[in-house]
Image (cartoon, rainbow, N blue to C red; front, side, top):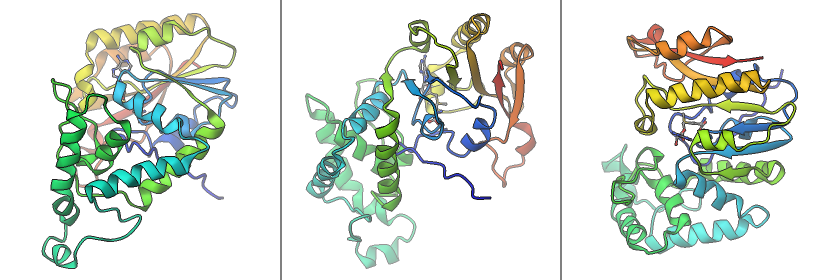
Length: 302
Ligand SMILES: C[S@@+](CC[C@H](N)C(=O)[O-])C[C@H]1O[C@@H](n2cnc3c(N)ncnc32)[C@H](O)[C@@H]1O
């Protein structure tokens, strides 16, 4: 049997569902009218699920700005690449997709860190220019994401992007992820929202066969966006899902119930009312003795 290709989001989002989407979608209904994602992040679920329409939301304005920005180039992708490569050339960053310009001596002396060493100053100049510009340039932000540490998006309390350079550049994988993203979104034509999930879900006029897929921050794991999450928000989400259930609206929600000795008892107790499907965890590392102590789950009301 030929395995279906899974598309990677060009946001390379930390904690994404790229590796789990194949498993998760086996529990989705055959027919989905609109796929509604209140915590869309990089978008690895919607990119790989067929529906008639897509309503996609995240509270992180930078993430939604990047999605909207990329989508604005659908049908004129060459303009996007022109813009991106112009900035890459302006700062002299390496771009292994186009050409390998890192000197051999640097590679020999620093086998594991040569991209970071080559790009560090150039990246810092771009970061300073981005942070100082009055109107923030989303193309520059996307390049910071691609060249930045762990491909994360992080801003300090003054609103400045503040990650150091990473050890990777614009390579063939980035190009492939972008070109897939453009062709997928040309047919999907998603609608983007930038709201708190309660407001976003509250404003929708639900239709037959809509599916809400939720991938919230997890209360008991550690991630950048988990700082945005707490027990009150988790309770609000669970209450909202009970309400959706009463209204016969289908939902599927991902969560981690056990993590290195911690338990999300709030979620565990709540989920007993619905169907629970164990999911092979993203967090499992084969060098890690904690393998059996992490449990990831998908809960559905259908
Ligand atoms: C686990 S990530 C989603 C990852 C996504 N499934 C993917 O594959 O890339 C959770 C997301 O929830 C967003 N988020 C956190 N609090 C939120 C809130 N109150 N309302 C909406 N989105 C929120 C975060 O910005 C983050 O992008």
